[in-house]
Length: 276
Length: 148
Length: 120
Image (tube, rainbow over all chains, first blue to last red; front, side):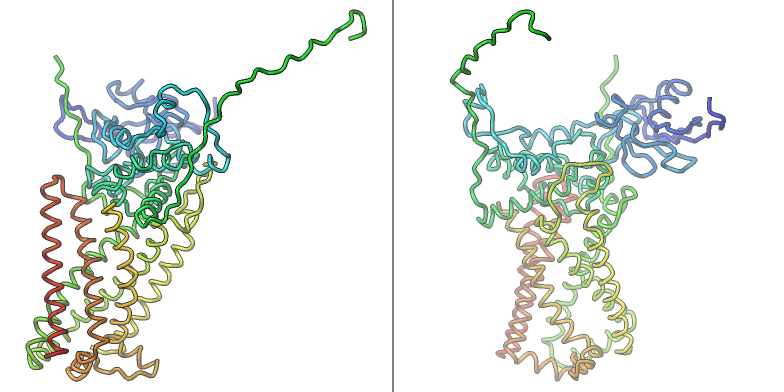
């Protein structure tokens, strides 16, 4: 056991039970913390020892699944990735993510974000529908083409960018930085031919043009995705398409599997007893 | 039998434009751009009424209006309009370049500690804010020189 | 692609305003700074100076150009802000029409006066 005594930190957690409460309220807990403890560890301590009805989402506890996104000390973070010591405070205020509905306590309803994500067709679209339905070959892609969109493929759908966005705060029909960044991710993929289908979905009154580049989404993203960059690059594509400056890009070609079988190589003759 | 409760709405609303957390420079430049824009459009509409309705009625009405407007409060308002214009114009030029995707750098695979494009270009943005502050000081000098 | 054009025009008019409004402010309001440049533009809002400008075609052109780009930029911007808080399509359409009407009224009034002063 370490010699230093555990530091007592107050967790001020927003509680809301839809069956009992009419409005959210705060409840305070005192948690003994030690070096290396994350906010998620603190919440689990509260649930195990102090208040078993505290409800929150968590899964991987290593900031790869995105379940534990919360508003901690006025900033949206992943609870498993935030060390209590890093916040340098004796009181932590923990609330669910803003701009998303609350189901209970710290659990946000992510369905609005998911339905926006589905709306922008987050899958590769090729004109050759027969090949899409029953694929028989690979697509060739250069490493440079991969780097054009790789950064935006790391999205874990945690909802932090939506919570940070000022437009998402007031515009309930706004697609949100997550959906718009993923739209760019699929359009920028050289294997994709679906730009013509996706552009009308984002060129709407509540689409990409309501992004005003506040940059809060990129600042808060826990995976370093930079959704703001993706959205500005999407605006660039839309503008050059509208001004007819866009060169027609050839999508990635198919690489058919080899049809000839490999030549037979004679099995070498090993004579017994010739050393090892 | 448990009734499926509707999730509680948690939107910040327009208050979320002003404050939604401890974010950095560009989020507040967005807010200032919006505030100055609204202030400027309001001023423009009033200014248009003054310079058309009151102008066309002849010299006497015009000079009476000008005498009314030489009130120090209106001079302060004029100064605020000019500062708002410099902020909105310079930030707008930055937005024209950046919202078209230029001067932001290419996508890079994220390696911790993450540096998003705005953070990499923040020195340039700070220079722009410094220029705005210098212009505001220069205009203040001009207004004080012009007298009340 | 209609909204893309609208937004792109917002950028173009923004850049034009930066130029035209810069000229407008410097010539008509910055008496002291202009003195440094050797231009004595004292009392640029006096009646004499204004009637002089009103009879010059170039100033009328600048005023009308500034009016057009300024109204487009401002009213489209205002429309975008209001659309971020409206929720129904009916309200959106009402807002758009209201903005167009306001724009037409101010453009008509703002063009009539300098042209009338130039010709009348």
